[in-house]
Length: 235
Image (cartoon, rainbow, N blue to C red):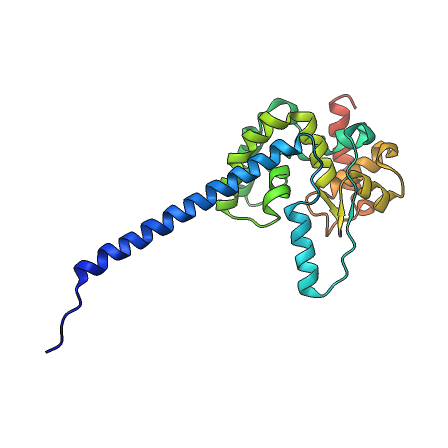
């Protein structure tokens, strides 16, 4: 006669295993979050040597056996033309100086356009985009969005608006292995970021939503929209 398995002893073991697993995952997530928060504190004074997007592109190039020559030079905000600063804000986050990390008005508009069948704008602020670039790469998921949302208030408090803008303009992807305003200005226009003009700035800002697909010289229509927005803010 075959003995029956003792389910009463097996069930508590399973529960214990899952409890340990959940506890370990929670501790791991808390450690990762703490490390990211400390990185933001350090970023108040130290230029990031690399970002999640930079690393992601390197890995992709290695997987596909394609050349990868990174252009990344961090420069102070004062060396980035105000034309480019205003163009990027007008294109990506018009209410940058009026929100605390989340632009609920832009999020609502983006959601409404999604429901109508075609989004023409994003809902992410420069702060959210900075967090994504620094820690999460270009992948999309609800989990990433949730983690990102917990770090946005930290960035707003410890960095402040001007440092957030400076970091964003220096780390954002602006072409194939091209990161930051200085590298983008030299790669696309052959000039330093401090010397870039109003129209050139609008064209650079116009490629930010899809920097690997768009080219500044092909962005006449959208750059005209950005120039109009800049004019409405007195720039």
